[in-house]
Image (cartoon, rainbow over all chains, first blue to last red; front, side):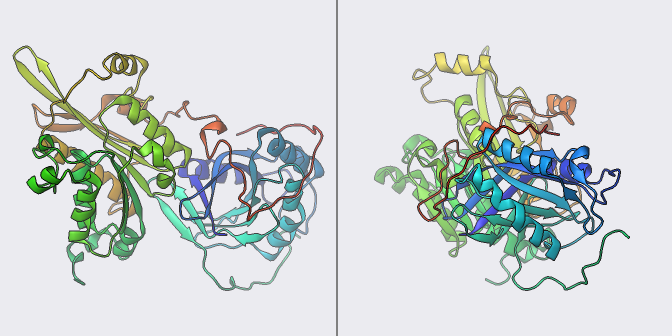
Amino acid sequence: MRVAFKITRRLVAGVQADLRRPHAFAAERVGWLRCRVADSPAGSLLVLAHDYFPVEDSDYVEDWSVGARMGSAAIRKALQLAYDTKTALFHVHLHDHRGRTWLSPVDSREAAKFVPDFWHVRPEMPHGTLVLSRDSAAGRCWLPGGQVVEIGEIIIVGAPVVRILEEHGEPPRTPELPRRT
Amino acid sequence: MENRLARQSFLGEHSAAVLAAVRVGIVGVGGGGSHVVQHLAHLGVGRFVVLDPDCVEDTNLNRMVGATVEDVLRATPKVEVAARVIQAVNPNADVLPVKSAWQERGELLRDCTAIFGCVDCFAAREQLETAARRYLVPYLDIGMDVHPIGSEFSISGQVILSMPGELCMRCLGVINEAALAREATQYGAAGGRPQVVWPNGLLASAAVGLFVQLVTPWHAKPVATEYLEYDGNRHTLTRSNRLVAMLGQVCPHFESIENTGDPFWLPTAELAPGKGSLRNTGSLQPR
């Protein structure tokens, strides 16, 4: 199934600004996009981002092997949010550069650990992860039923309207280095 | 026909492909909507869904682009006239004409790049804008009116670009309880309202310009929200003072997540979920 992810330009700007705030020890920040869902007449799934919830400062744990690591409290609160509001949750973080971006191998590995947990609380909803660059984005969606797909189209709704289409093929291979030493 | 769009190449290197790929919804293709249809066809927009429940009548011929005497005699659905106009200009266009009230086929508008609302009452405007925001679709509204002032007449109108996440028509004062209540008391008694071709054309042109700057901007500062007021007696189209005063403020009318997406969405049989549960474990605060 094809997935289209829509988000307003105002929300993207707010998320980027929040994710750029320095943290006491984490090298980057992460947060959650709360989303609702709809079927499109063309048969694809529309994921519609509504608002943003930053991971609280105290919910990071120190781990220098990655840019940021959430503690269990961060995951528990996000699970509770999805459960209470019957919504789809998408983890979001920032690759602070211009141009196309992809989930890194670390992003992929870590998301595969925690995203499926959201089916314990909202099995009927898709959940996933989104990575923003300064002017682009990419993401992956875990569909109800277990299928995992790349988000085929990300639409930033604003002036201008920007459509980011998934490009098939491998992202550039770069060595995976610790973000801090 | 390779050079069909050559004169608008300043819209961008890939503008022809962008315009061919967008899908535009047009609700109401009688007066203003018929101009919008014609403009978008000439621009090279590739995918249309046009909705209107009515058929062509003789009273439409003073303003409906593309309608003919033959259409009056045959009572041609207005959406078929719209499809004919589009495909006469661009035979490759994908046009979905729907002879129906848009509320009955609202799902067809969900994945549009933009929706043009060319309807003639406040209630319909509000419903369309609400639906557009639900699916994060930019909404462009046009409308005109003729008011008697003593023995003379005043022509007025508006063009609005309502962008999800930005100021809405309630913020801009276009939709308000007084207007809705006044309209409700006149329901069924309004009769045929005065309409003429040139304000419809002018307002439609401005709305199409706002649409183009969203999808293939030709300058660095496209606007996300616009409210242009038309004074048909002075022949002016100017930015509303209300918008100027409110720019930078946040719309409070669609804050609830209940206003986004399908209220009762459930996965199709193709997506069969498992089950689970969770105890209360704290809460997150939105930023």
